[in-house]
Image (cartoon, rainbow, N blue to C red; front, side, top):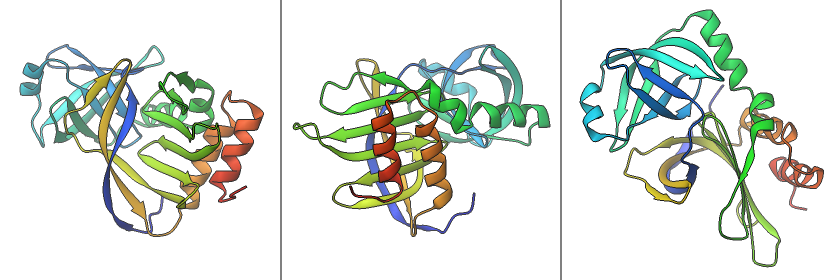
Length: 230
């Protein structure tokens, strides 16, 4: 995916689903770790026991088994980031079969049907799917939608009634997160593109169009992700 650069970074507190759909088994320790985020470039694994951080160090090689949809794939990579409860791993070159399986699993047409509603406690609508894929529809007390946010594959696309449309990259800051019920509030770093990235928009629209959302919501989201205000 081509990038046009970023106009700057900002930290944002975003809700994340605490339940992981993918699991990584560390080859040396045999321990299982929930995968918080997954892309074709790498993953972030959740560390529930602080003692397990001793098995990771920045730059160290990591090998193990990635479980996706009840299938197991041997992967290897290197630790790039370490936080209080997250470890970021960048994949080394993977076998073609594994790359193909990851690409298929992470295709918006595959992730879209798996978007499931998550209670928010307010008027907003929050949907989550595997691999840190999320759709958040913010709305006022009167029911009118004022924001559409799509986060997937390390990208963020957002339409806001006041500020308009923007795209960019999003990554975990690896700061300590706060768990509230079944969701986790994490501080993410958002690097906004200088110009709107049409490829990111296309990914977001494909995700929405392949989902099980109502046709009205699909049309609403698609129009906003095309930059339409009404």
